[in-house]
Image (cartoon, rainbow over all chains, first blue to last red; front, side, top):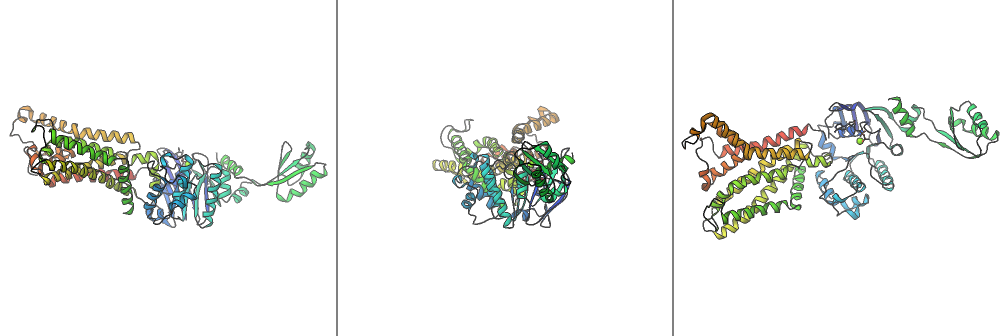
Length: 300
Length: 277
Ligand SMILES: Nc1ncnc2c1ncn2[C@@H]1O[C@H](COP(=O)(O)OP(=O)(O)OP(=O)(O)O)[C@@H](O)[C@H]1O
Ligand SMILES: [Mg+2]
């Protein structure tokens, strides 16, 4: 769907994106993840032709700049900083953008209802709060059912419920076949939403894969969390002594044990045999945060 | 094409909603009526309604100062304002090319200018027409059309500054500078050059004819091109012309005015195209 090759962008002396290449496949949710200033927005703006860049970008096999109009008819974009026309109402705003896309018979009210702005439809956008602007921003980008959505930090400015609802909508649209490229620095969000992630740092892609594969690759493994009634140094030592256990951390009553899943049973047995009373235990999946920190640190 | 129309329509409606069209029209109505009734301050005929062509003569100077101001004010923020605010980024993520944004804004603002001129001068013309005997409608119509043309030139100049700068304030500075350049500096500098070349004695000779380059450079100033266009085509003010070389005719000054529009819009586009949002 999107094919970026050797993309490079320099802003008078500052290299914002430093020769990156990646592909977003049709039908997937692809996330650009990275700290502030990593080059996410710059990458997105290049794809949209909003800035000049070096390198090649293809969308649905077509060179992006020379097929700009055709591509943008089937694309929805939510900018990082959403801004509209203060003097227009939400309805007038959507009407204007619908006209630009050549859309007819759009049910603007239904669209606003979808993002929870139906009561503010006739209000001027100039009086909108940050979150309301973000909602309207989402409404305009899904208008006309585009086949590709590009969302630059879609949940910024939204309250918890709003962010949750938006994530659900993104998932639903994706299930309906929409390809989604999003950027974020909220790890849990990316982990929950995306099929594949490109981790960016200082203008480069430092890792790119599914969350699952990334955790394997960077050896961030699931952990066993065991809550004991009374932990002791003896138990700690015994657990550490089990062959396949890689690491044990004690935090109050909780032991966090880094081990392959096959070692779980022997760990539990060892603890019980040593007289330890287990109150609770569960497996904690690796988080993107761990991967992220590891990857970014390795590349510093 | 659809996109240009959509942008033009929005630009026009913005100025309709914020009462610009009405405000500018009202200024034109009041100005025309005041000048027609009271004269332009040079004692031309005393108090009482004057014929339209006399009115035109009284209005030329004021209009050639006012229309550029209105054109610049209408256009200077049209693009840079959206850029500063951030809405330009969203706009250009739609199937709209940068040249279409400029074209749409030009057409929309041009329509505001044209409408304000027609309504303003139209209403004033009708009121004057009811009160006087000989109505030179033809001349008056030419006057309105030339004023609109001047307005369009200054809208293009404003759009040029609006496309090339990152900040509203810089674009406004550019617009103000150009206004001073055309309304004051241009003539003074040219007069200075003539003075240096010929000396004051020769210049005050009534039969003195300036060299061709003087007319060409002088008419490059769109304000001068406008007043010459009007004088060439409106009999009551043709005495403003003085001695003119033969190449100065209507097509020549029209070409200058259109060249300004094209150069400003195209130049603005070429620079705007290379800008990052
Ligand atoms: N218009 C600009 N002019 C100059 N430098 C810029 C411009 N836009 C971005 N940069 C620089 O390019 C680099 C990448 O910025 P970019 O906005 O792409 O980062 P990001 O990953 O989107 O960050 P964030 O998470 O803060 O949104 C930064 O160093 C930034 O300062
Ligand atoms: Mg960003």
